[in-house]
Image (cartoon, rainbow, N blue to C red; front, side, top):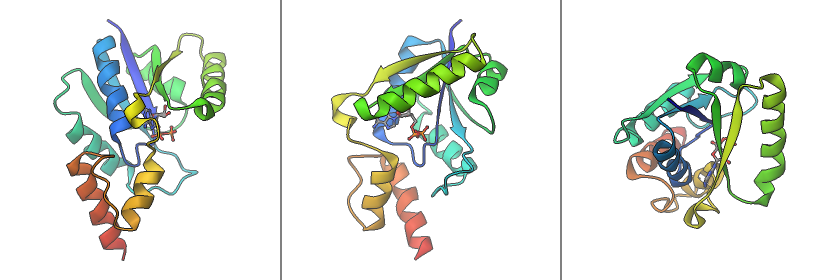
Length: 161
Ligand code: ADP
């Protein structure tokens, strides 16, 4: 059985991430979407909120589970029984960083390999930060995230006012 892990901040999850999750779920037997507790960033949603949102929007995918982790990705991958890391590549600008990350992870643990899925053209422009920026000005984000996610984002911004 081939198990893969899809790590990221997912603050919040977008249609771009969901496209990668769906496609990875049709390639691998099991996918774990893992929310990184990144202490360097100040997120809009807490880790547990992001996990809950991801669970809600992936509930129709039986071979997808969601968790979170702190520390090294390779350690979490091994602990989860996954020997493949999935990452999405939007544009050439993602490439340098992703290549460095993948090579570092392989130096840390040879058993864990990274598989890149290229973004569908429909979502190539999409990032969590632009979604947050548009929402913060009250703009329409319905083309970027599922309605459930949009509601959570608007609620956060309303609460912060
Ligand atoms: P990170 O902080 O790890 O970059 P993100 O949540 O922004 O976390 O992204 C997680 C993964 O999803 C990365 O591999 C990223 O390249 C990919 N990704 C982000 N946005 C998109 C998108 N619109 N389409 C496809 N992949 C994406």
